[in-house]
Image 1 (cartoon, each protein chain N blue to C red):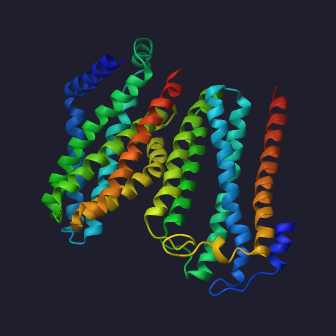
Image 2: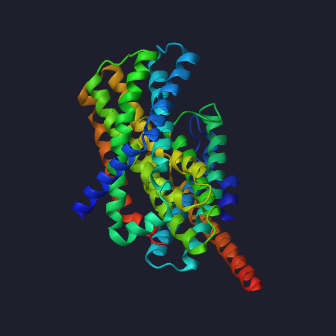
Image 3: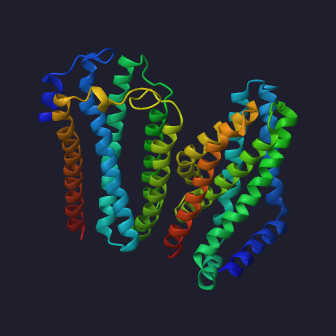
Length: 205
Length: 218
């Protein structure tokens, strides 16, 4: 709530090009942060599941990646709106945008894989293997490759980073709570979904 | 472990040699795809298009070639291996065999592709190095994906869905590298792509080595 109120009403430093759209920083950037955190939850639980196959761990892995997917799509949409107003197009050929789209595809494939395996134990194991593999490739994709080419995003390809001059005191005050807020929101929804699952399971049995 | 590996590689080659229809089928697949491109494009002078089309055909051929590496084996045979050899030996032997297969497919593909659609390559050695690394990378990635896909139902279509997004980083690097090779850009500029490719291949092989035992037990 704090993020949303401050995001729309709080003071922002006026800047060339970006202007008021800097407010989007609270939504777009923080959503990506939250998505990355949730994907790490997924990775952690996948590795844990391989070491010690408990069904609960696999459920957490699935729900965390589902939530990450929702945040990712929202991040993509807010990013597109921002791109339209600053770079002039809904979609520009930029390494980071392509990376984001690729990530979405990877996790869409992850869900399809999950749905096509009947046995629960086996599904958890195979999905965990795929998600560890996919996460490793995704890291290469969105972290290493963008460093090799130019990007329109701040901090890359000669563009100055946000932190250098425009992430000033007031922005920070909202930015970090926003990251925590989106992550907590994701974890909260994830928890509710896990509980619903448990209830359904106990109803069935 | 090493002797097991060597034995399994030999087995793969011998098996392939016995069913020559599969091998020729793959060659015909590549050649006819190139021919269709020739019929639709006639001649490609634009370098990026030439390069992109080359690698797209290569990817489809690779997916087709590697997809059957786990699917053609019945559960009985897999159980037999399971009792006999170390799982890492199985995946490593498949990766090595598939790389060899894809490198030969890539060379034949290059031959026909340049015959029909014209050859614009200025630095042939560099392009061949790219071809070698690219095929190895494709083989390594696709082998693990096909192992994953073979465990699920409706695996042939799943194979493509699972592998495309994972292949993007490899593909981006290899396309940039081979484009530089076509343009005849100096090695100094291009060396970083070789390192990235080697790192990618190393990472994929290590991950396969670590993860495959989990796919294996049933």
